[in-house]
Amino acid sequence: MSLEKLIHQCKKQDIRAQEKLYRLYSGKLFGLCLKYSNNYQQAEDNLQDGFITIFNKINQYEDKGSFEGWMKRIVINTTLQKHRKEKYFEIINENLLEDPEIEVDDEEITTDFLLESIQDLPERYRQIFNLYALDGFSHKEIAEMLNISVGSSKSNLARARHILKSKIENHLNDNKVQSL
Image (tube, rainbow, N blue to C red; front, side, top):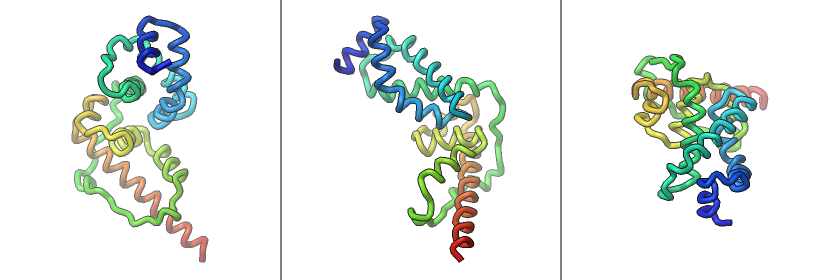
């Protein structure tokens, strides 16, 4: 069954089509949920909530643009909606808005280390870092999604980058000490 037909069947609330769509995209969307959740259980809950929203709003999809992109945006918004009312974004020293630079050899830092470091960021920084650096949203879009100012988005991103820079530098220094 083509994707267009599958979407059409889902618009008719065909349960088998919904199940097929879920099986087709749940893996990718779950990975996305993991980036914006505190733990595995919360990511599972967010995936479920995201698919409920997708099926409730599927009639709003007008066959324009990427259907997968449309679903990703719904899942991200559904996940972040739980955090919108919380006031845990903070403005930090504006001097930190410069992008930190680190010279790193690909063999020294593994993807697993980077992903673990991102996951260990405080929630407010992790969300903005993921939205901006990994998912390509602008600060204006992030500010609208999270109901914060553009300045808060920028400053929280800067803080996330500085924390990651420190973790990477510490990891590199630890590896140098161990190799001596």
